[in-house]
Length: 129
Image (cartoon, rainbow, N blue to C red):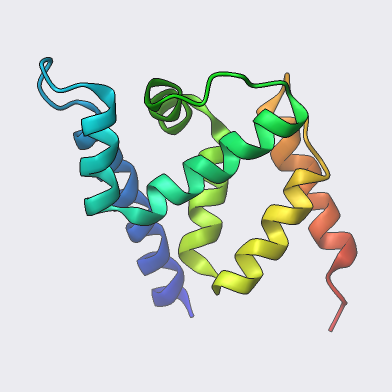
């Protein structure tokens, strides 16, 4: 069980490194090209960033959903890191359930509180064994 957790954390770290490499590409490469390269190397990175941005667009009046904003989300938004970790550890259906829960707990001004509230909501909805 410990090995599986370690492997999952390593996968998240690799995803973050890949995201960093794609976004640190040469200066003449535009942001759309960076996202295309990242999508080829780490499709889940782009999927999760799109999911977080979609929630922010719906609940926080995020109007800028450009490639530049996606890169900023990957670099700076703690909710992206949280959801990327979730995506790497659970089945797609469970990821969608957690994403839906996250969408009901949004704190536009405080992403760490958003994560905390999402975790609390998940604990409440998870049956005790």
